[in-house]
Image (cartoon, rainbow, N blue to C red; front, side, top):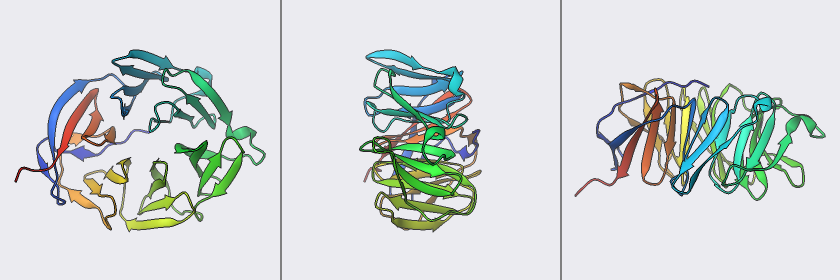
Length: 258
């Protein structure tokens, strides 16, 4: 999915008393920028191949028969979730990108079409079932599927998660669900095209703006933007990464000086 939004490449003051400052730019020839894991390894997709580059070695994974890689979840670098939407398949790989196992949702007792798949921990995945238009938790050991949400109207624009919460944006609404099947929060916001979470805080974009939702906050803070297109972004503990046009822009997240 080609996503475009805009970010001003200057110091930007957040309304929650935090600031971002551009630290550096790094060339990267990628079709899809995934981001950096907790060990500072870089992940990206190029020519239907997942690459991992880091201080302890470089690794690759591909299976061209499965089609394009739709998403890669690196929240657990020892159990990485690769989702192939075209073939309705998830592949799990280890920290060397060696395949652990795979499963196709075409082969489940109740066939489902999956639009998104993310790591939920404890042998589970967050899924968005495009047939029922519901968020589900799927245990790939027991094969149990648990509906988490009611059917959702509107197109799903972004789908991200951690082990406790799933964050889903449609064209008019942002929803947060927990693993117990409860909806934690809904926020009216239009046109979200990309999102990234870290420690239950979120950064999201639409076609013109960058927004931040601090953990526990009730509404997004608008960060004034115009100028650089965003193909992908990643929020981590210390950095915000923006990728576009073969360049990774790295921003520091720091408290302002008093």
